[in-house]
Image (cartoon, rainbow, N blue to C red; front, top):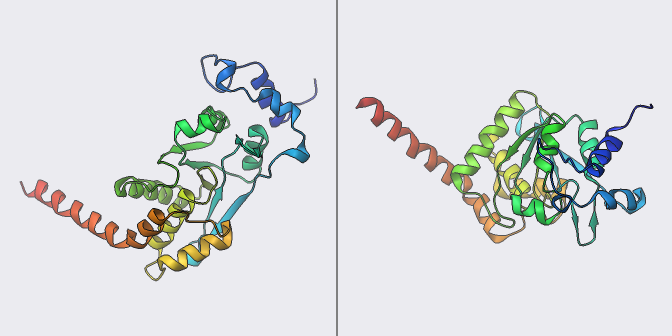
Length: 233
């Protein structure tokens, strides 16, 4: 028997209706197997990872940003097996996912997190709503885990639905955190150069970014005294 490619293997599992979980899933939970076969390569929506060089903030690492792999919504037709194969071909090791589980179901990739894990990727699922911003504490946790991944030389990608709003916001916050000379407007400019003019999509995201450094400093300061008080007692 000839050796199967990753794409053939994933599609075969989809046909067998055992999508990346110990238990068998119903076909209705992932009903794209027929489309994987029917949609030709020329009809698939291109999948692209933008690699943001962190050398702009004096780091040797790169941060990948992309749209939702395998998404099938409106005129978007991506292949999950092919997109995961592309991520692996680019050496991706860690994936930060900002989509909610409801979104993953809506965009017909409900088993995405399981697929990542089955293919050996480390998954950081830290969701917040489309067009919205994370709570400051959640944002700090995301950035903390991003730092760990990058400092350990892990090839890291972040994504939401389109890779423009939530992902660009987190990437911009990372730039502000890594460099005291980086400004919010410069961070937006950099993200738009790499992801297009739609990066940082809403007023709420724009305001969050401009207030981030001050709010982050206040958040850190508020945590330190409480720690000191608990020790002194």
